[in-house]
Length: 216
Image 1: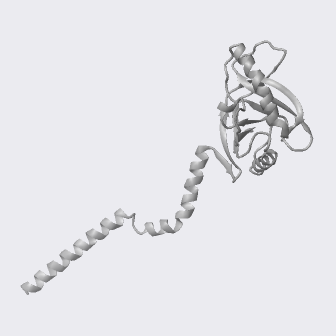
Image 2: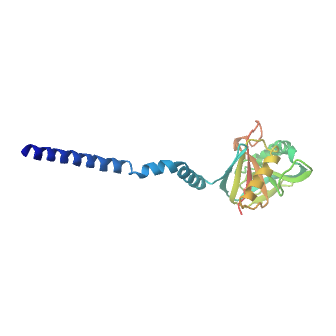
Image 3: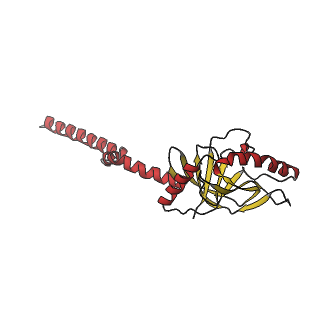
């Protein structure tokens, strides 16, 4: 009888250890819900990723572009207006930058950003269009050689593209179309500028540029 009692207590002790170990494993692995979480992990990861991208301002992406929301201050551009083909933009930028930079240096103005082109329509490869090319400066100085254009700051859709300035007509069409499909409005003016502001003189070949469309 005594031997049976000892065996019973031994069995109860082992059962208690198993229960304790089971509870510990359950808590450590978040219970049986861990299996359910694994089954649903792709969907949950998509939700988490979408939330993270939204915080970073990412709107759309493609092999040819990435669109993010960004903010820009008010800008005062010093430059020239042209009516010509969009495909001649790189020539306009190279021809405008040098005399404008010489004027900036001669009058001790301060550069406030990279050279930019401004449009009042979506660029295309057919026909002439009005293009303003200018460099942001800190203030106005009287001049008859150049013009000033004030750009209102705010939020913009910024599309970084793998294309040089003046060679992005097709991407302009795709980007504006994608924004419209996602409930956005295209308002003007819109802008284009090189990715690296250190190349504002266009002394090197720039393989990337940025498209700016106001957020409305």
